[in-house]
Amino acid sequence: MRSIADFLRSIANCMRRIANFAYVVRSIFDNLRSIADFIGGFTDHIRSIADYLRSISDYSRSIAGNMRCIADYLRCISDYMRCIADYMRCIADYMRCIADYSRSIADYMRSIAD
Image (cartoon, rainbow, N blue to C red):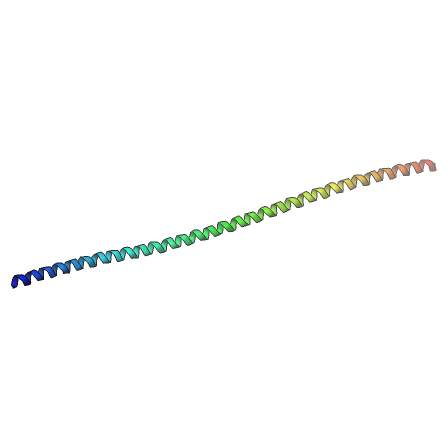
């Protein structure tokens, strides 16, 4: 009977060691899971930073597009102002012609009066 009790005791000790080993393995996997959760949270932060940078990039592209539109609008205004300046030069030339013609009429009238 004693040998059976010793045998059962040795089996119980062996089972206790296996249980302890299983507990150690379980705690290692729990630690690995917590490390994975930490890395997952870290990657979520990286993803949110990347999304934020992407939104800044999109906003910058939008601003650049608006600036291009403003530049085009200012070019159009500049072209329009050049056209107005050319028109004013034409009017000035026309006024010079009228002044020359008026002088020649005045000279002719003076010559008749003399």
